[in-house]
Amino acid sequence: MVDDNTDMRDYVTRILSQSPDWEIRTAGNGLEALEAVNQRKPDLILSDVMMPVLDGFGLLKKLKESADTSRIPVVFLSARAGEEATIQGLEKGADDYLVKPFSARELITRVKTQLEITHTRQDNTQLRKAEEELKKFKIISDHAFDAFILMREDGTFAYLNDLTLKRWGYTREEAQRLRVPDVDPIYQEEKFNEVFALAQQLGPIPTFETIHKRKDGTIFPVEVSMGGITLDNKPHLFAVARDITERKVAEETLKKRNELLERTNNDLDNFIYTASHDLKAPISNIEGLLQALLRTLPPESMATERPQRITYLMQESVERFKRTIANLTEVVRLQKEYGAEASLVDLSEVVREVLLDLEPMIQHAGAQVEVNIADCPEIRFSAKNLRSVLYNLLSNGIKYRSPERMLQMQIHCVSTPEYYVLTVRDNGLGLEPGQVDKLFSMFKRFHDHVEGSGIGLYMIKRMVENAGGRIAVESRLGEGATFRVYFRR
Amino acid sequence: MNKLTSILLVDDDTTTNFVNQMLLEDLDVTEKVLIACNGKEALEIINQQCQKGKCPQLILLDINMPVMNGFEFLEAYKQLDLNYKQSVMIVMLTTSMNPADMDRLGKMPVKGILNKPLTAETFKTLLAETI
Image 1 (spheres, each protein chain N blue to C red):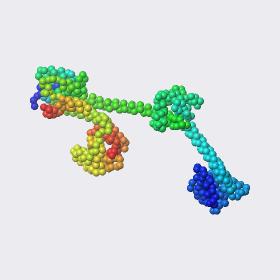
Image 2: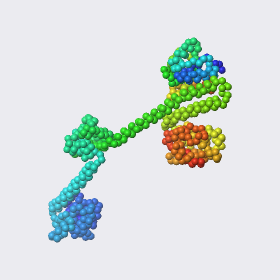
Image 3: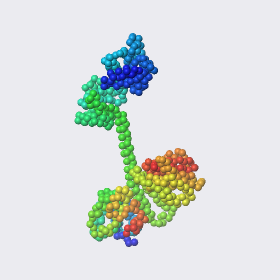
Image 4: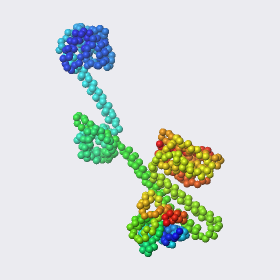
């Protein structure tokens, strides 16, 4: 209620306060009114025309300028009885006017009428908004990539989107008489009722996989997200069904491949185990027979070089055979020991032990070994395997030293947030670029001037990888090699 | 070192038995080498010999054998009621280093475990340690 006249303000306030639904706020001129409107939008403004600072028309103009306030209905309370003022006010966008003096009844009637018009206008706006929402939903629903299914308690459908009908193979007309049992080949009434009731309590229920049946009787796999909702005060079950035919095919293929791989792996393990076991007996016998033969033959028959050489080579072949079997057995053991017992191992202790074991070799080669592992006090690994890793790397370094220079080896270790990186570096023969990739494969040997089975690096790679780490090598032919072992922290 | 009266070899591999028999004879450590091709034959020989008061002093026993294997033999042997049983020593001679097998042997009346092949050195060590 905007008026510069206090009596008038009080009069109108008194009249309108009789209705308990109405809250009356007052302002002395147009400017004060704008401030009040900005604080909280009123449902209706009653305003005097002639006022100081900002008059009624000025107020109206300001209100119309802002989209936020332009829809607030304004009723002028005019002292100017006469056509011009009336027309002027209405032309400028006032909704109504009252000429002073007016009766209480007249004022109340006009105010009521204005508020009703406003409410009707608001209802229409809401209806239009709802229609827009519905249109949006229809577009989403019509173009959805999954089936939208709304079920009633009796198993009939309250809504099915276009895709649902297309997938199931029914026309919209046929769908009118469709019920859940027609499309769910494993439908059980009891179960449906149970799920329906559960979904009303829980809202969304956990996603599950099932099958749907088309009109032609064929079935296809679906993944269903489902939940209970209330529509028109009645319980409904809303489901989104995703066709997972392709995923199922892919899963099935993967499963089959996995099974095949597992079987092949098992067969291979068993084969190696059986082979190594069954080969042990005959080779032991050959060795024993050879020994017996040597004991049996008269000493003079062995006096010449030829039988000596033959028996020596026989014995050596037997030894090689036995070593190979031992290596195969070791591979199988490692395979079976995936995820071996790891404990915190003192690295310096292991390095000391391995260097002690290798001392004769180191002495013989005249090698220098530099150790700097203070950064890695303890490594989580199988102690036995850690010893194997170090032993293999160091003994390889010694075996494949360069005859042209004194062998220098470094054992370093640094810690990174994820790994302890143990480095074993030598200045030996080194490797050609093409050899590096093949270095860790089974029975790979690049040099034939030294003893070796070609299994050591394969084994330590397996050990390290089984424990979640990795091993890398960097080398240049004629300059040496650097092995880095990454132990997971 | 005194010669043993007899040693019983229990193995289904006749070549192994032949090799070991030759070795033992050449080492001259026993009066007699007895041979059984499986556990059942071994039990029969033990019964026979012990009744005559000539129990084998040492039995070298394989694990994997047809008819009656090493484990079955040991179970049956435990049930035997013989006068001179205490004087019989059983040593396993096998290629199986399967941890499960090793565990099982721990609960058996076995004095030692040898890995095949039997050699002069391992046999001498065995005798020195156990007899």
